[in-house]
Image 1 (cartoon, rainbow, N blue to C red):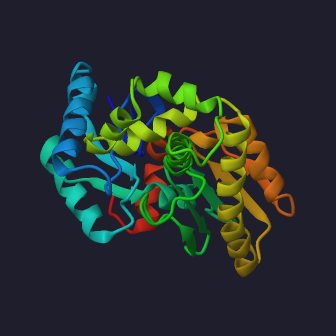
Image 2: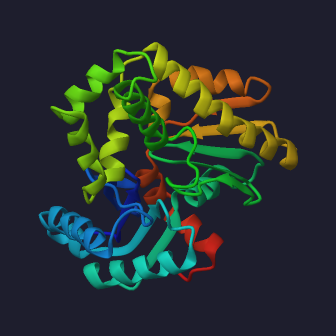
Length: 295
């Protein structure tokens, strides 16, 4: 059997991974872990737990798992060199291999999409960020300082309006009932316990995939998208490019997607539906060559 590549796409809410036989570009196995591995929002202990779960799943493939030569990852929060190097050490320790490539999710998309062309790639998942073919970026400053139009930021605004309603300064909206059903709280004070959860960021963001389209959610989505698309538009003008590619879980929401496209109607904008973890594995030779890694 030829060499096998293990590819990991670690976002804020889920971690996707696959095994690919490099010679035949054959996907042997792929799976999703319902926990995010964002390096700015998870502890080293949590990261090790997720990596060990991946190791346990691929162990059942025997020879294929033993032939893993390269591990390539696109990880949220890996843009910082210190966090990236620490995660590389974890990978080498857990999987007992030296051939490891760790990129941020946005950097991985930039390299894969813009091999020979200009443009901008936008991610709106748990958080948000945009980057140009030259590496200039906007957003991606984390869930406390930015991440406009990301799932976490949108849901936080919904929760804030819920408490405004409880405090008598905001009108009722049906999304509040959905909030209660989703998080299963009996009293407003019980919902605050979300802040003490180890995975509070991914748990809060997960509501975005099921939130109903109400007057309030429409208003919040419009406001968040308006803030972020202003930054994206400015980046496109600065880079003198007309091509913008959209990626991430929030674009599965039709209202969100249509609003985003409308705000950027002056540009050639399209949604990308590729699986990042699979694309990474299939393009590992290109990535090694581009990054100057010996093969």
